Amino acid sequence: MNERSGFSLSEYDETIRMVLDSGGEFRIYPKGRSMLPLIRQGKDSAVLVKPSGFLKTGDIAFYLRDDGHYVLHRVIESCAEESSDAVYVMCGDNQCDPERGVRHGQIIGRVSRIYRGDKPVGEKSIPYRLYLFVWRSFFIRRIYFKLRRLKNGV
Image 1 (tube, rainbow, N blue to C red):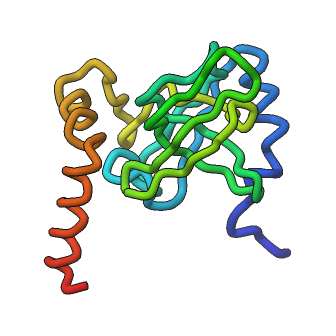
Image 2: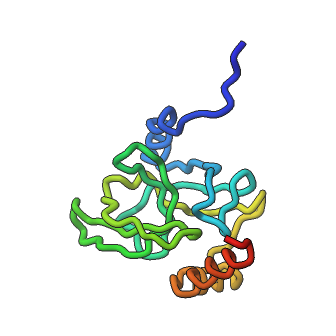
Image 3: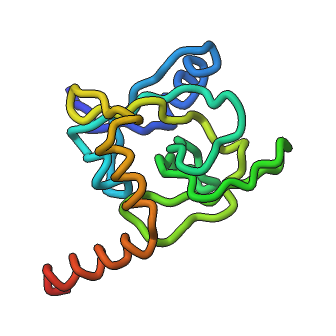
């Protein structure tokens, strides 16, 4: 018998949307490195809820790109004007190149909680607030990436 080593999120898109539309929560286990150091692949998870309105700067959104890829990134700028053509500028915490033009209609869910292993990350905790303050600065982030490249000899 052939076992599947993975699955495609597109297979579960309808289920995720149905759960969120009914007021439920959906827990995902993100893959990739774009949200490091906050979310680590294979170790951490995120709980999605349906957004109750337009997202604000700092929110983490789960959305579907026009090319069919599902993404979990942070809102770094919100151009929400209570209209259907509202757009966002998104960026992973481990990236410096923002993605512009993400439409509100592409947003599937908003992260309500993050779990590091089995422990919830407190959004109001001092370590998380300090992380947000430091890590959301692109200047500090760029310095960090340059130092990391120098250390790794790249």
